[in-house]
Image 1: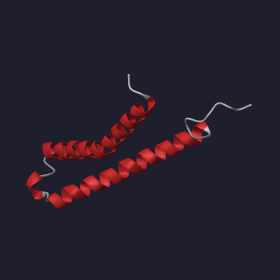
Image 2 (image 1 turned 90 degrees about the vertical axis):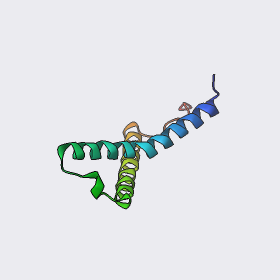
Image 3 (image 1 turned 120 degrees about the vertical axis):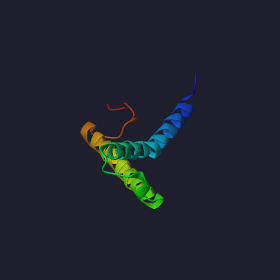
Image 4 (image 1 turned 135 degrees about the vertical axis):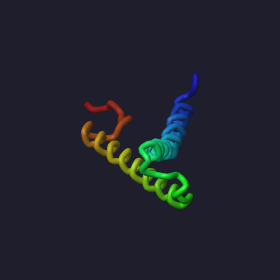
Length: 87
């Protein structure tokens, strides 16, 4: 069984990989849909345009995740993982 530090590291790595790869998966799904509907020809996209799309999705995904996190903290009334020493 992994220690608490190992689990924390694993959660951090998983979160980092999700932040990196979820925007890429969104772009692939969007491009595939546009290609199937005939609205886009893949040969018309330059690598720079693909990188721009990825960076825009990355910023929007990370910003959205941060806003959801802040909304969660606001809704529960404080930071997670606090002590239960309220007397």
